[in-house]
Image (cartoon, rainbow, N blue to C red):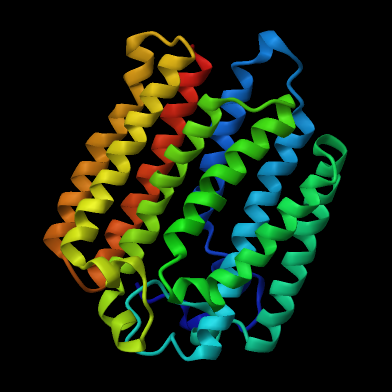
Length: 302
């Protein structure tokens, strides 16, 4: 879609596009699930709303920060050239100058840290370590780890285990096996977004010497892995809900997500390559949000 030629360099609109609002789904879903899990414990303790809000804000700001970091360093490396298949990037399109983007990512990193700092009051000084790890791996993902096939592991950890478990702990001062299992499920669902992104870029990544999981296992295995991530996640989710004594109907409600997930997988296989896979990227983001909503509803009506 050709829109952005009239965008003024370093304008508010340019920064809004650079923040990639659609990607905030990935930041929102684990926090939503954690809050819903914590809400099921209302009868056993006090629900602390302030850390819940701070965790959500921290997740949003860190996602924007990750987008700025990715935009800046991919531009510096020369990865965002005319062969790029994904959505347009701010630096490569001239919407934001590299110098401004560098300052922007520093500012967003600082804001994220300041937003997360009060969580020390609720979780102790250990939260400093968690926050620093989030920031460190945010940079390491784009600059190093995404080139050696570690991206999917980082998604599982930092979009699944860390946000779900830490948010739940900060709200309830507790952690349970159902919460940990739910965090794995959440990470698997969100990893489908990275899988389809790297599936689209597999040819370019191979030419650039970037070793993602997709380039390592091949397109057919990636297609099956994409499908399996959704199905395994829902299976784990059903286990969690049954562990929390949900009724069978409530426990299987998140399985509605599988209808959309499987349809998207079929389209992904049909399209197979090229810019048309950006449609699958959008559908996957939509599916992720629906998964988060269905899971949260299931937990709240236990």
